[in-house]
Image (cartoon, rainbow over all chains, first blue to last red; front, side, top):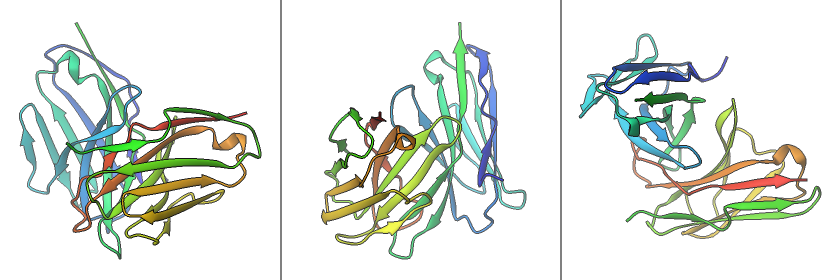
Length: 113
Length: 114
């Protein structure tokens, strides 16, 4: 079983649609959670952190359910520029400081006219 | 502006060659990481370092070694390249303090081993 599992997609949605991505993780000791975005042929970049209380950043809402070990990302009013691969990421602390990230394989989103 | 640079965007090597991939960050970050990214497998951690001359194995260290002689530079070494090491290699860095710290990635090096 993979440590972080995501539906690979692709999700093809029209502009303006609402789309939701889900992710599950297996390590109950994971400390923090993120969504990264990766454009085609580019490096991953942090989209947002995910907190138990849920958090929102503009059109993006992330939720964490620690009991179910489940993370979600909701994108409202999707734009063409949202087309990318969305990576679910969980983190554990390192002895020396900082964090070790474990990545899901990503969910591909294509927003169409 | 935050910046992580990698020495090459594309590299072609032959089986058995020794390969050096260089990564430099200008953010004075303590932690540095090397990943490889393959279709269907995602990003996998090869090695990381949380201080100069310190290194720790990640999830797939076999066939690789690393060097960190200066804080800003982290090198990945393929002692004897093999075709199964054909991949996209990504370097990242982050601050020391907590598990909430963002990792900043370089643009990647696409390595082909013939």
